Every structure is written in structure tokens, then in C-alpha cells.
Image (tube, rainbow, N blue to C red):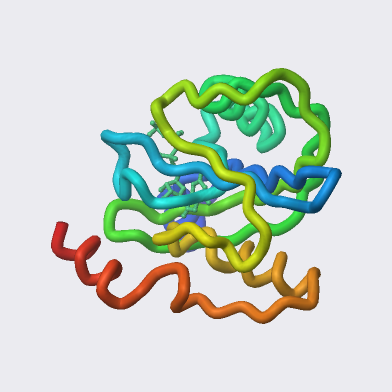
Length: 161
Ligand SMILES: Nc1nc2c([nH]c(=O)n2[C@@H]2O[C@H](COP(=O)(O)OP(=O)(O)OP(=O)(O)O)[C@@H](O)[C@H]2O)c(=O)[nH]1
């Protein structure tokens, strides 16, 4: 294959599988905090993680959620693909909706979990997760205001950390 500027640029992305777990009883969303030791520790995100070599998005999501929060997903409905440039990484996020899982939630990395309705009551939220929150809000006919999730003050603290 001829390597072009485009394919070279493609390689710089870190591929990430992200799960939007939706509780059937009330439509609440599972949000988890980033564990200590990772960039933006303590910030809120949807659970997920990086694809390992040879993995599909579904396989990566199943592995990450078993490793990190102790459950086994039963379905993985491919939803959207987004990209976000952080100072430390250029990520491509493969979003999946998950409505069925088994097992008990167990935060295995010392993180926190919360079930949330929109708008979320936790912040700051990773910027890369904001498009998903916007679409979910649209789907539910709710307003969306990104500034409630990542305030200018929080952004500037993260930039200077
Ligand atoms: N899980 C998750 N990652 C997100 C979201 N939004 C977002 O920008 N990301 C980015 O996607 C990347 C995921 O990497 P990670 O560090 O959580 O993945 P991982 O568990 O495989 O980490 P490790 O193997 O480095 O320990 C991070 O750069 C993170 O900032 C989100 O909502 N959930």
C-alpha cells in the first residue's frame, strides 16, 4: 500500500471504544470518573478504553468494561465515531450504546460511578465526551450547554497542570 499523508495522519489516532450504558428502567446513563494516574484523573467520562491490536470495537469494549467496572456487556450497538485532539493524544472514539449487561458493578480501578439523567450533575466532563452528550440530549429533546460541563476555569487549570 502506498503511504500517503492521509494514511500517515490516520496512524496517529488512538482508537478508543466507549460505552453509553443506558439503564432500561429509566434511561439513566452510566458515568464514571477517571482513575488516579491517568491524564485528567477525576474527570467524568463514559466507560471504555483503547483498542488493543487486532480487537474489534465490541471486543475492546467488552474487555475494558470487564477489567474496569466488572460487568459483561451483552450487546453493543454501534452509534457514532468522533475525534478529539488533546495535548497528550489524538483520539478516535467509537461510541456504542449498550442496553444489556450481566454481572455486578465493581469499580476495579478505584474510580466512581454514577447513574445520571441529562443534563449531568457531575463535572468536569472530558471534552471528547461532549458530542455524545449533545446527541443524547437531542435524542431526548433536551437543551445542551457544553459550558456547564467544562468551565473556562477548569479548562485553564487542566492546561496549566
Ligand atoms: N473512556 C473514555 N475515554 C474518553 C472519553 N472521551 C474522551 O475524550 N476519551 C479519551 O479516550 C482516551 C481513552 O483512554 P484511556 O486512558 O481511558 O484508556 P485505557 O483505559 O485503555 O488506558 P490505559 O491503557 O492507557 O491505561 C483518553 O485519551 C480519553 O481522554 C470518554 O467519554 N470515555
